[in-house]
Length: 614
Image 1 (cartoon, rainbow, N blue to C red):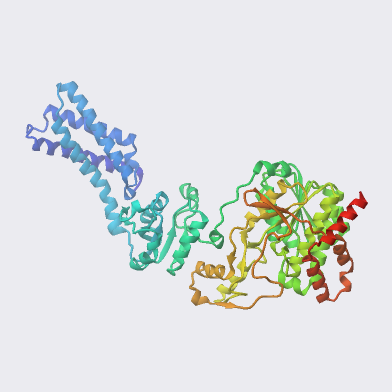
Image 2: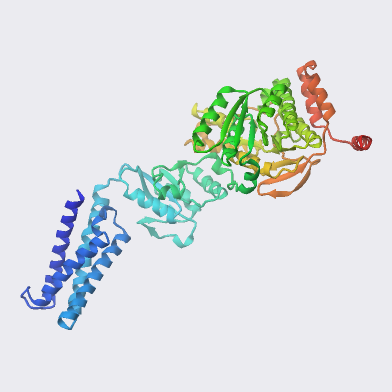
């Protein structure tokens, strides 16, 4: 109905109610049966004018009464009360007395008629017009402000397929209460029973302030029920209308890592990135591209995207140019192989970067086991080329991204990353450039992560293959890893190994089970098979070995260590002669050197060499 017609109808209805209440009140109090008595005429005229004026003032006629709630009731209360007060004032002026009993009965009748008429429309709508038979019975976890808002919107939204039927909340003060007519059954420990007793088909987690460890606990309870679980988007997005209550997102694996968001020292990072030239190798990869995104937030003067694969470099270039079109950042691409030392020198000379993030590397463990010469060429020789070019052209800070597999390595990939770290430590001793390495574990969503593999296996109907039931790994998300890499760069003094706090290690089989449940299946439906450990794999990973000097945490989620083991002569020999080795012999040489420990004799010889050089 158009607003003008609606306004006219409501004015007419309220006028009828006002006159009716005056008539009933006068009869009850045995006033003059002549309706046109002066007191009644004054009361009627004043009530009509004041009520309609206050209704317009409080926008009472603009309310959608099918969604009426306590707010609308308060407006009716103020409108009726203030209009009665105005009548009382005029009665005092005109007749030197206030007919209090008359006004009290009129007030009661008006509240009943006007309020009742408005709220009856909501009752009719909720009872008869909204059909709940085909809606999905939903349990809301969290009976706080967010959960209440979700429940209200679900109840009032005709389009939604969800019907809230119960709450669970760990606040014992809310247990056995009704919120919007929906019972609060108990705490999270009652979740499984509630799902069964109320025939729940859907669970919504509506606690925006929830920490990830707490979410993990709740999800484990939800996973016992075989009911699909979703989570409330950010409360700000709901309030601003950016996202509706129908757009609950799925719970993601990264939600269950038990990790809190990373807080960056933006001032410290800005000092060495803003208005400077930054170069990222491997800029098309999953880590390199995210580093580029994070760096762009700090407004460098120029960001050089260096990579070997033209498609991935083109993709990240286009993405950044669109995302930061309103800035003055110059995005420059360089298609180059880090194994080409002359090209690396040329690029460094051309751009003169202030900071270099070296993310280019071969990272796939089984592939490098079969191709150790490629690991040497890319991870060792390539790193040497980029590092020497950076040093020659006076780069301020050089950050190499390493791996937890470099600690006591059992694989070619881990061994070559360990030897690449030694190359970086040696360069730091010789150069004015600050060379550092940053280690972290597995990254969710990266191209080499198990998550994409598990998802494909689940889509095919299973089974999900896990190498060993006891295998554990550290995990973090790509954005978190990239932010901490950038943060570590701002803390560099030279020669450090920065180790990112990876949180608690995660069993791969538990990760697989959670992913199956998040995909809406039971573990029994998809199945899990154990394929056996692959060459080069370890049951668990480490972040620092015993020979490395570990200092206290220097920044939230960042630890620091220094390595005393540098076998640069042997490393250079391997890089110059690797083509002469049989593949298995090359693999053994790399692993033996990467795991070699410095003996007392080695240390004595090193001191003698240092004194002779001095």
